[in-house]
Length: 369
Image 1 (cartoon, rainbow, N blue to C red):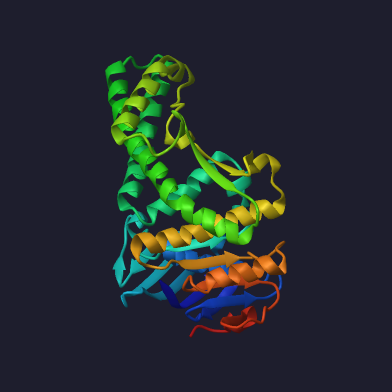
Image 2 (cartoon, helix red, strand yellow; image 1 turned 30 degrees about the horizontal axis):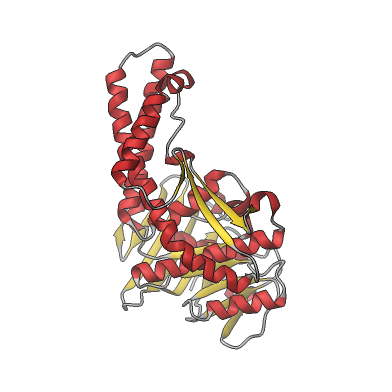
């Protein structure tokens, strides 16, 4: 997947800006706080309908303006063209238009433009709360598996309904145990499908991750485990076995959940455990090891997308080289040379063969094109 051009209007600190990257590795350089990250975030909006820095559309408005506009053109490796337009106003909220057709819900756009990101804010994937690692794996799978995305959406809806009923039971406003059993069965069905897909993904993903990690970090052995509400899982369990496991788990904890008025088990509480040389990295790894682990995760995600769909995803890397030595930076460039189009922000230009550099100031316009 290749971004051909993108135009910005009133987006973050860009009144007007436009960008036409090359096919390979692109660098956008400029001082910190000058708007490099905003260029990447606008591209991410067009690919995945949201930013990767802020989850709020209103925060992306240029100060004292009441709308922003993003217009972009992409080309798939098959030659298929995609034009994406996103407009946001406080009154009308956000509107997504793809090839002149309005798209709703926005989830219908996910997967059309595969995209991976790296930003310093995403370090919380490796050293933050379990929700960040769930978000990583959900995003990785959803861009290549529409059924998984549908299951996630359905699971969240059923979970909300089940929790609402548990609140009624806790407040003695309902004795509908038969209804609770129905929601429990529906939740178990979706939970089994989600966890099965996550574990299968990790089994396919890990060999590529391990290979890339070894290119960036010598003499260190990584591992990734999936910790479910049912225990630490490998790829040995079937969907049916997982369903029965969740049914039993929910039934055994029904009294406790009714007292707490919330669902205490399920994929919404699972976690990924990351290790280097048998030691959990959240507790023992250095900042350099954490950053290298995350970079390898992202590069492995790129390879997984390509192998699964035949399409090389667009790579958006914000400040990826910070805190890395020259040898590791060179290794990343070597890997990216085979990864299609990459757009990377840096504070200073890096002169290198097969790299196209853009000073940020060259992207800013005084008026609309």
